[in-house]
Image 1: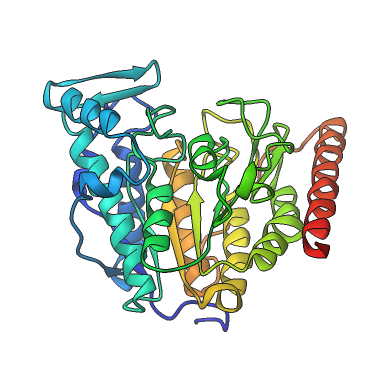
Image 2: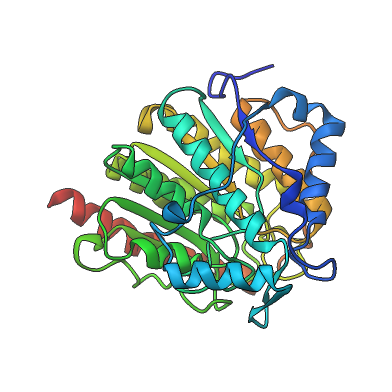
Length: 358
């Protein structure tokens, strides 16, 4: 049964071409989306979604964020069988096509939300994007889907956009795209120290962007309650203060405790809680405009359950399957995480209060 804070109708971006990029041995492989789609079909949620028609982004629109030389380089690599951008980021012959289509889907969802043709959307796309810098891809990412979608929103006439990123890795590419601008708020909660080595509490933006970047780095082992506390005490108040016209979520699920690449300890229930908090506030913050874009998550079962819970939270439905709990934290590690978390919360609350007073 739908709850009062849910979205009556949820739209989805997906195309099987997204599974054709990459290599089967790579952590960011096509089976990730296959697992998600399979679970949603079995649960019946797949048929509850409205599936949008969309095409590839144009080079011009990708060029809103990325250098044309880089776009052309990636196209060349794909057309000639593929090649590596770095040790972790490998293009194959289908990469350019999949990346352009993924970006096009995120733009389509954004434009449809702004035109009020749909209420909100979840973009089940790959390759992911939040590490992609203007002039190069990295960290499994090629084009920065969420940054391009946010730029599309602003070019449609909206004044402000907010991006909340709960992927376990800091979204250095997204931060870099808007670090000097005041029209996009970027919030990231992530493991630290960890790849890509950015995202400290002191990275807050420069010039017109001063104060519009908010980072919540946490030590390994952080759990549901730590993320939810940060979300309630910093992310949501920051968004309310910023007053965006549209909200984007960079939805990476690699903070799940079973993920093979990360050392955080969230559950799929925790991701449900984060999205519950977000959806509950979206109507008052930005007329209900919400676009969720898939990033990481490399344990297939954990990823599929976490995406299901995200969709259930967006629809205003209860969790259907409770997740298993992670192993118990050592008391000293629990204490260390709380110390880092409370320090970061105080720093950001002080900054937020100062900005509000000014």
